[in-house]
Length: 607
Ligand SMILES: Cc1ncc(C[n+]2csc(CCOP(=O)(O)OP(=O)(O)O)c2C)c(N)n1
Image 1 (cartoon, rainbow, N blue to C red):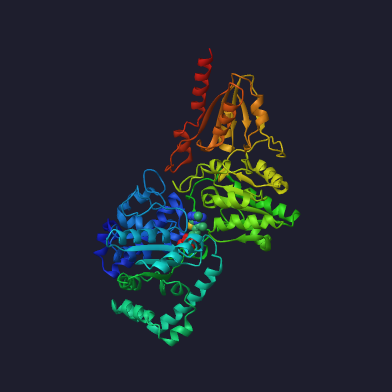
Image 2: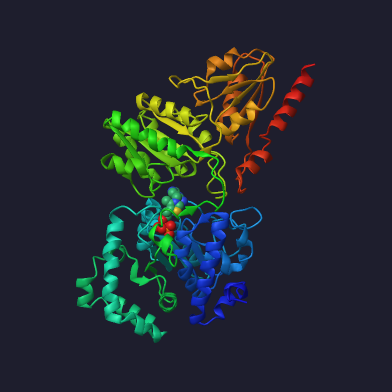
């Protein structure tokens, strides 16, 4: 039996010697590799944090101590150590574990996460609550250099440095976000990374580690001494310290002995401290180490690629449009690969902006660009656009700035769980005056919508899921805000369906009119008015019903002088923890069978 099989809790881990922790870490790394290859998930980030998380659990006492992972995509080792080793075999499934920390999964998960740059705010919340309630536990935030580019991290730092609650911030610096990290903070971290050489020489780290536990004491004492002139000249300006947070580092994030020693020392510090550790994404696996962006999120091996990604359509089409329109720019918040902008970045470097994990800034910056005569396309996942609700409302929509939001991963999302579902955007965008919302039925229609967007002089959102499986032969170009009739029937039954998967379902229902409701807002009132009294209208949308497209259709008929029965199909008013979109649709009754039942009931009542 290996060490991995013996560890069922952090207490078991603490029984190992520091030397054995290395063996354990290697076993964990192999287990993560094998599992992610089979199930998909975040590979490179997790291979980079095995030693760090092992050291953290060795030193701290969870769940009493609060370990807060930023984003949470890098916490697989934490799951394995905290009693979920066997469930981890079924990673990203309802039967196993989710890919992110989740309070409903384990008491060791201090918070449910998935979106970036929350850990410092959560950490200061926990620290403050501890002090108010007179409790005694440690708060440790693990935040990547990518997540540190998010505005909320800066807001939290501003607060933490001024108020000085005891907490430990571990900055896991691997120079990468999903792609190469960007921004001025990243440039500052690069300077700090260089100072590692200085620390190594001064402390001959390898020798010192063999003299554990004194290493931690010596290095921490040294870093605490401000009088050291050599340190002052060789270490760059201390931004964190000037903001009131003590800085320690940089240290090798794969050296467990060193980490254990330093963490033990930092545990006793009062006030906020930041431990800067250097790690490699994909550590231990050369192919991944050299291509960390390719292995950030991976799909299961042997899974046949049957679907076409909307992002690939966007990427190619935007490049073609940029050639014709010199004022067209593309913007991403650290998601160039996911949203298909990689080719654009290479071809039009001067018109491509990766602003870091900063959706609020991206949206507001686009409003500024548009106000000054540039045509911005901001490609962003639906669930991350939630961050930029106010900028969309206040900065883009009040003055009708012609910004186009390209909303990827809209609707049900496979694998990433409750935090990544893109099911709220129809609702929150529908709320905002001056906003127009489109959804294409396939790739060709998306291209037509992008053509339309270039000349559209107002805020526009085009939403689409990750991929589509079905391409239509016929397309009527998008040159106005009208729906498209796909199937006509003499029956007074209409299915208004938005998006590829909903239309696919609608097309399987016999003897009905099928409408491609490609404009979700504003409604095609002319069409709705043309529906005869006594008809049944069924709406199908890949989003929550509350506040969505179907409800607005129902609202229209409630205030119009018409007797039309409306049935809305979409997701119910709850968070969706399911890992498969198809299960969500089944549970919500978005199936041909259920539609047939609805129609049969309607016909019965009509008799
Ligand atoms: C608000 C938000 N935007 C985008 C993402 C997508 N995302 C997940 S991980 C990640 C990169 C994080 O980089 P870093 O914190 O350095 O962690 P690493 O993977 O490099 O360890 C991004 C952009 C997200 N989770 N949340």
